[in-house]
Length: 141
Image (cartoon, rainbow, N blue to C red; front, top):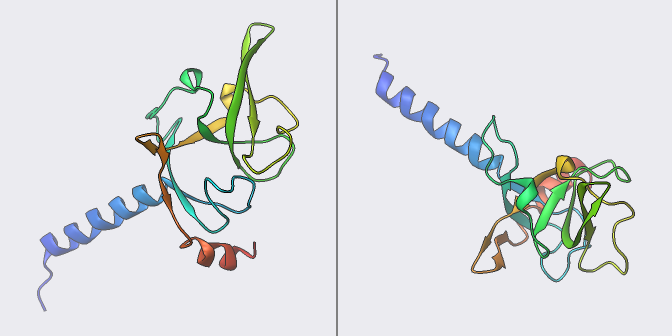
């Protein structure tokens, strides 16, 4: 049996592309952003820092952007919308809220806490409905 190095190289390239693409998908774990997206949906994101590549600048975010951030009040990343931007002691701070929540998240968010931004096309969030349920089930969520 002869080893085809071109075929192996092709499989390696495909595997790397799939791994990179998977890093830009997040599964929604709650209903806090309904009706924009629902639990079990997958959102396409761009990264604040992906292997040293800055796909967006956290200082350039706008009211209405949906971001993924490291919350001090929750043990998993949170996907919510920026509803206000303010300056506190010279530092930009974001007020963030889930669309389906009655009140904003309990603490302001600093740019350094924001990991990802949900991609939009023509002002529409890029959402793949329901296929994240398998991931939720496997993770026990």
